[in-house]
Image 1 (cartoon, rainbow, N blue to C red):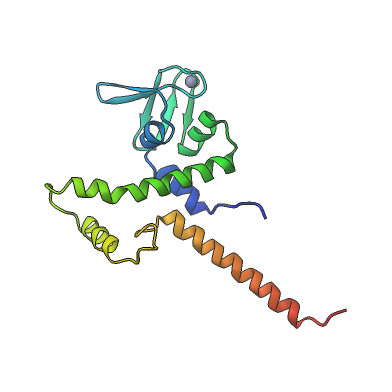
Image 2 (image 1 turned 180 degrees about the horizontal axis):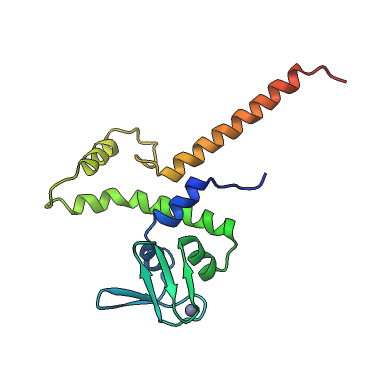
Length: 166
Ligand SMILES: [Zn+2]
């Protein structure tokens, strides 16, 4: 069976993961900051005539005249196909989410947000076997898709049982 991704999942990977995070943390591309603006080494030409656009979550190389969303950035830098890049990005993002609670605890002087409090409470209560207290949207979608596929398999099995054998 070929690996498929839902539209929501792809939209999340394109827009939900900051492109700066993909460049700096996930891919560790060479980068520098000019007066707070991030410039990265273009994965195609290696030049620094680049910028990132927060609004659209795109990275641009002015020399290549190309925009990269997070998926395209992974494809260009790691020279992977689309499917491999999406899988790679998903795995890295799950790790990123797992790291979050530690970062929250460091930051206790500022007023707590309700989301932080809830995630803190949730991370105390779940059974020890649970890996991530708050599954990401993409994880939840993936698990739902898996259930749908299991249902289809079940339904197909039931239909084949009801059909008289020839
Ligand atoms: Zn370039």
